[in-house]
Length: 362
Ligand code: UGA
Image (cartoon, rainbow, N blue to C red; front, side, top):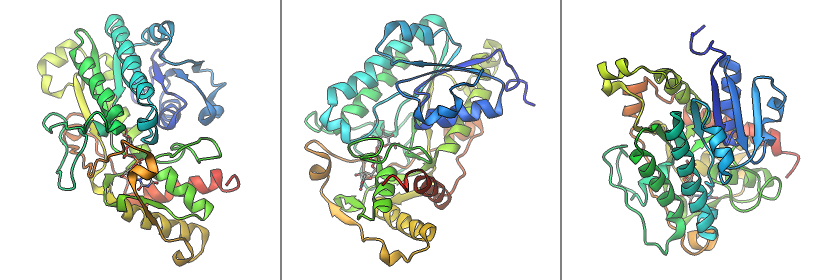
């Protein structure tokens, strides 16, 4: 077994441990390593099966509490996954979205700078902003970042996330890595409206809910925007590649001096799968087809998608990124990581899970 993974003296703090990415990361850590976990979140329903694990300690809290922030920063590796990250909330709750995505992570970054912890901060692919249909590959350190006007509150989230990235990058003495997820999908993503959440979840959960309910999928502004969907299990593998390359924050100064270009610290990484790019209309049709196969019915029996306007659907201030195609060259070069799960597999696995989990609750 890998010596690092076998080291039972390591504890990782995971903020947002009960969330979509957090629950899969927790499972992977407990399965693949001997590490301990200090997990913080506001609810733990996705990780009920881990609550009594003797290698874990959980705390119901958020980063608004300064004493919690200081406690988290005592651990040598801190993964911050906590965020308000559903676009339907960016318009209605912009101040809250900004506080949770800037104030709280900035306080955590300050505490980690003081304690010497390695902060792995989850940002977003949305920091690339109002991309157009012909935007090409998005490069971490080169692509221009352009947002809409302040009246378009869609960008409240991306602006706060970008400010946090700049804050982290500017902090002296902070050992940091920023991760920019490109539309992670998989089991436990978001919620089913009216069952375990309200409002509009992100597209995978929203389309899955409509399919289970026999309702038409809604194509915002015609479904011409493109996204590159990434398996959450690939995302977890990325984190393991990062943990290993950074030797859980113990990568020595000497090693860094010898090969500074190989350092995973002071870097932002796109995590995405450019091979899985689809328009949202293509996604809708793929999901209809896979759902029909799962249920053993004809695709013609699944309602046709309907076009809706973004402003009517999400509210005043909604705008969109028209294309998000990640360059993944940096993660490959520095960490030897590349996402590998093809789109059809990701969607089938996600939908099968959704049908099993919510099929009787709809
Ligand atoms: C969101 C978040 O803002 C990002 O922070 C996050 O990183 C990203 O999801 C992600 O999952 O990685 P976005 O991709 O716009 O960004 O989120 P979705 O709500 O999943 O929307 C994707 C596209 O589908 C948009 O064009 C949206 O208008 C469209 N959509 C969504 C529909 O056509 N119908 C729906 O029912 C829902």
